[in-house]
Amino acid sequence: MPLTSQPAGSPAANSGIDAVSKAIIEQLQEDGRRSYAAIGKAVGLSEAAVRQRVQKLMDGGIMQIVAVTDPMQLGFSRQAMLGVKAEADLLAVSDEIAAIPQVDYCLVTAGSFDILAEVVCENDHDLMLLVNQIRSIPGVRSTETFMYLSLRKQEYNWGTR
Amino acid sequence: MPLTSQPAGSPAANSGIDAVSKAIIEQLQEDGRRSYAAIGKAVGLSEAAVRQRVQKLMDGGIMQIVAVTDPMQLGFSRQAMLGVKAEADLLAVSDEIAAIPQVDYCLVTAGSFDILAEVVCENDHDLMLLVNQIRSIPGVRSTETFMYLSLRKQEYNWGTR
DNA sequence: AGTGAAACGACCGTAGA
DNA sequence: TCTACGGTCGTTTCACT
Image 1 (cartoon, rainbow over the protein chains, first blue to last red):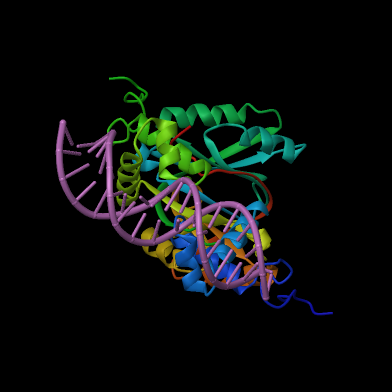
Image 2: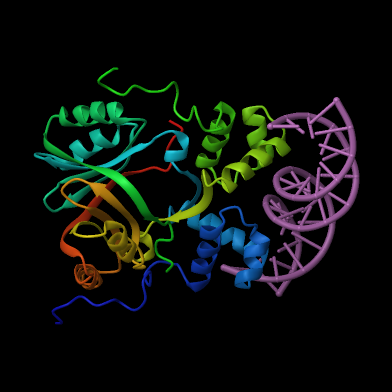
């Protein structure tokens, strides 16, 4: 038995995602409104076949086509990642944090923080209220705030590099 | 002069984003391929007007319509946030980190970490190599790895709550 | 799972208020 | 910046492979 876990062939070998579906996903990562006909021409499939595959990817929750916005340009100039240390049921605590509207990203982690949460606020005052709110959730022991100074990269092309 | 900064009216008051454009963005956050005609019916505008506004939002970098995928279902089962402590030029270091393909999110922060970077990998072995690679970048003093255990929330509706 | 064809609906450019 | 309209192209359904 090897000491390191090695890739089992190519990624997504067990899913029903072949190279053609990946090519379709890539097309839609460039432009989510690109026509099925144009995608078909690019990947060598008929328009109907592309549509069927896209439908399947959407139904399976593998892909979604959405608008993503720049918070800064919409007046939400304060973003931060909160590192949370908690006790007891991490799923319960993280779900309470996730239920807060200003939280757009929340997950349970292994490391010196138990939960990470990304928050979007209009200003420092709102951010402070939000941090206070999270610190008051039962089970939360401490929070640390990492204010965003400069966004360097933000990509959505997971899994098709 | 007040001690706390208060909201200057509503968010995005200074941008050219009115309530109608926000409504259009909301529609496209639900479904990035919804037809302009259907959106027009929902927000009370003609198809052409919707199209013009969407074009403007895209050209201004305020919104983009893209496919987002679930890394897990595409065979990328290891995700982590890396907290990086660095010295010297944080922009230079963060850009080097951002240039790594497996890094999908990278930013400079104020706090006990100088840089946060989210990475997507196929397995633990790849993640280890990646952490090593980042630690070898000149100016990087230390890294801390927060392995993702359970994603609780992931939203893209910034600025339209 | 894939193709092809016909009816329908969406998109795009242009003109005009 | 919006509406109105006509030409073009994309999408949908269905029968077939």
